[in-house]
Image 1 (tube, one colour):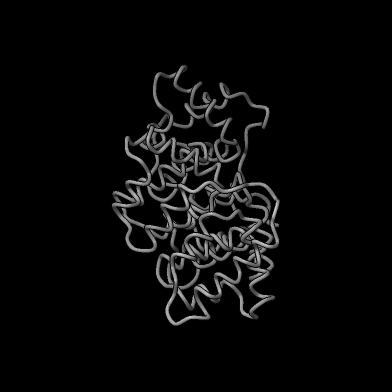
Image 2 (cartoon, one colour):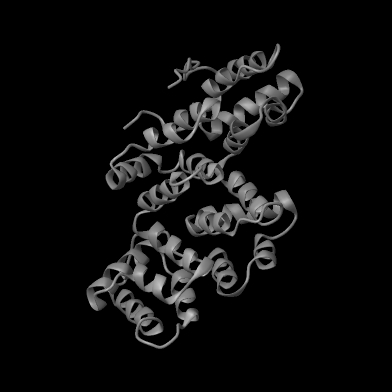
Length: 315
């Protein structure tokens, strides 16, 4: 594994900007030096570095990175630079326009909190001049479209409080809408999954298992399909254990022939400043191998160095 020489954590944004400018000079850029700085700076620090760089050198740092880098390391570093809300907006815009990727759209929307979604929606229209709901409606269909639109529009509590009576009512309603009947009442699934908080949905999942013997996830998989199923499962698993959910997404991206670098990059970059330590713990628990070792074996060169820098110590 590459060993990075990282400028001190107390290095000022001005010093970082200066070191980055030096890394761009000469024949080819010093990618290791760039990684050594940017991979170890949080969102607010990166924003300050960008500001200082613009003042000092009268050019946009992100544009310079784009012109100096190529391939997977370029995509990963450019995705890392913005703050989380802007990054999510950029991911969704690309996945809903130039490179349609409804799995990525579903993953991002259905794994974010109400406050994150609110900020994302505001930024989306500010950046692209169109409502997120409009782009979703243009590129999705059926129950999947209705689920995503409802999920980004419906208010949901972010508090821990759970009403046990409503939990049991919801568990029963979902059973009656799915396993108990011939055919599926998708409207009931959409309503409950779009209106209830994460703690509530976690409690509904437990109640469902206790009341009916089957897991709610299995019921979803047997009663729904396609992207609608993926949306419901993502919402449910983000309520139960988001670390476990993203560990599975990463495993799938690295399993089999070839690596899904787009998914690997997206998940590592978007979760590094959220809950990566939990994802790493769940990955090791489920697969008996550290996430760091898995990424190391599936990637190479500067791209590998960057992702491993984001992941941190091999624990």
